[in-house]
Each structure stands twice: as C-alpha cells, then as structure tokens.
Image (cartoon, rainbow, N blue to C red; front, side):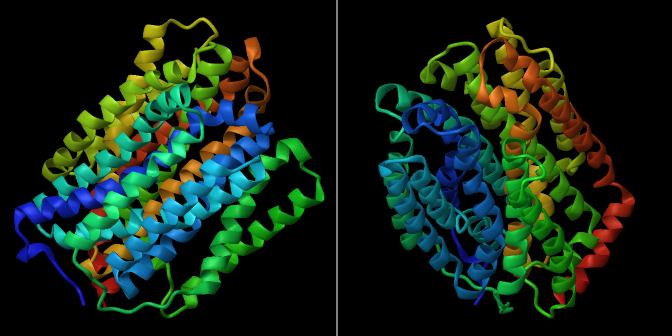
Length: 474
C-alpha cells in the first residue's frame, strides 16, 4: 500500500508536515541539548572525559546504526506504525535518562532513547516525501523539514541552558515527554498509513556489520587517547572495524535485497550529498560540544548564559533553512552549498584565532556565521537524498542520508578527544591552544563542502543520476 499526497487538502498536508516536524524537533534537539548539560552532568555524576563523550556519542552511534533499519521497517510494516513506536520508545528513554543515578545508567538510558530516535528521522522524511509529490511543493516542504533540523539542533543548547539554570540537568530530558505525547496524537489522527509496494528484507547480517564498523571506529577514536593505542581493547576493536567494513560492502553488493542499496552511490549527487552531510555534521558536533566547554569552563559563563550564545545559530537556521529550500527548488543545490561551505570555512578560520579573551561580539559573529552556513546546507542534502529516486525508495534513500548526518556527529565528537583531548580534561589557559587543531580540521571540512558543491552539480553528476533512476526502479 502506497499513498501519495494528491488527494489531501493543503490544510491536512500542513498538519502532517507539522506532525512530522514536531517529532523531528525532539529527536534532533536531543542530539544537542545535552551539550550544555555536560559540565553539570560531569560534576554531578563524576564522569571522566571519555564517559562525557559517550553520553553524546552512544546516542549518535545507535542512531546512525539503526536509521537504515528503521527506514526499511517503515517501508515494510507501515510508516505511521513505526513512527508511533519510535515516539513511545523515545519518551521511555527520556524518562530513564532523567532518573539515572550514575553515569553508566545514563549512558544505557541514552542507548534506549536512541533506539526510539532512530525511528523518527527517516520515517518522518519518508512520510513527507509521500505526501508532497510536486517538485516545487516538495522542495519547500523539505526546506521546512531541514529548517526544523537546524533550528532544533540550535535551540537545544538554549533550552537546555535555561532548564539547567532553573531546574537542573535532568529537566533537559523531561521536556521530551509532553512533546512526544502531542506528536503521538497528531500522528494517529492526521497521518495516513503507507507502505512500500516493494517489500524488502530486514537484512540482520548487513545491519550487524554496519554496527560493528561504526562502533569500532568511534570506540577507537574516543578511548584511544586515554587507553593508549597499543591497548588490547583498542587493537581488537580496531581490527573488528577494519574487517567488518569490507565484509559489509561485499555482503551488501551480493545480496539480492540489501538494506542499503550500494547502487545509490553510483549517483554523484547522492554520493556527494552523503559526504557533505558527514563533513557538515562532523564540524557541527565538534563545534557544539567544544564551545559549550569553552564558554562554561574557559570563560566562566553559566549554563543559561552559554545557551544564549547559541541564539544566533537558531536565528540563522530559522531564516536561512527555508530560504535554502526555496533556492534549491528554483536554482538547484549549488548556490546553497557554496554559501554553506564558505560560511562554515570562515567561521572555522575565526575559531583558530580564539583566545580566553575573545570579545563577545566576535563570539556572536562566529556563532552567526556557523548558524547561517549550517542552515543553508540541510535543504540541498535532503533534496539530493530523494530527488531523482523513485517514490518507492524514498525511505531507503532518505535513511542513508540521515545516517550520514549521524555518522558525521559521531566522528565530530570522537575527534574532539583525539585532536583536542587536553581541552576536554582541563580548562584554563590551555583550552584554546588544545582545541586549535580541531578548528583547523573544521576549516578543511568547510572547504570540502565548497569543492563538492561543484562536483555534485556538474553535468556529469546529473547524467549519473539519470542513469541510476531506471536501475533502482526495476
């Protein structure tokens, strides 16, 4: 059973879009709201530097590992059903996070929360793609969808800072409960059930190989500096990841019905969008964590004041994400990608000059540039994920791109410990110098986005997408 949006009124379409965006709001916001709470969590639960990274990265590792499975499950068992299950599990995980008595149980609760979160992002995008079928209306809807991703990730630190200041760090998880309840009701009333007409297998072997690869890489990057690169655990999990990745590629390429269709990557726009997502979200994840530690540890600001520094990010995403969606619908992806890559690069260059005495107006400038750049990048990434794909493969294609976003965050958080470990374990005058290598890497990530803006929109890229469409439709 496959439903399309041609028979629905504009009002119902907008309510469906709002329902999907509401659930996406909590899933994306939770990925960043914890950043501002990290100093309070570390002090209250006596967490180490690596445990602090795991509080964030266990969520994104699990999310990235299960997004593809969730997208396929939605296509097979019903998108609305999977969506509602995800909301329920996410709410349960949020409740357990708020009650965690120690750091280990908090990490475990974040694991449960991420299982639910994995069912929100790709399934909501798949629902939106099924309802908004026209090229222009879909581009605009995806622009708002991308805006919610950017806005929620930017609002997370602001909301989190205020909650921590007036209630405590556990309140950053309580906020999810009423929003989940409203989203469940709206979904039940307004969102139609839909399935893919092509029933795909779940592919547990491929799923497990992907999970082993990602977990192994992240574990090595986070724990390597503390345990030592010759520690048996580092060597063992590094070897597991090194073996699991080629095994995953070989297994998926030979499988008749893989959970990730490697043929998608024959499309240059799709492959480029995946790389752009990894680059932009790696820089974003590192920026959010390190600037929270910088503002609270290095500069001595409260959690509430730290959250307010993130306000330019929210404003930039609010204004420029919908604008980027309109630009993509009218002029294609290149203008938005060039603006995004250029602004992220400039912000990263300014971050390399950061000191313990940088003026407040300079900090706000950096946050504004990063917010606008990040806001501009989401719409072209999302559009490339489903553009040119048959509607029947929207869930699988969107899940790949959603996964690449979370992989980027995982890598970005892990790089914080690898490249700026001193900044995570100690504040004071050494923070800015310890973090500088990380900002230089962010400069490279921004320049990569600029380069891919040209690669992904070339005539050769368009031809590769045209050749792919009939292959995956068969």
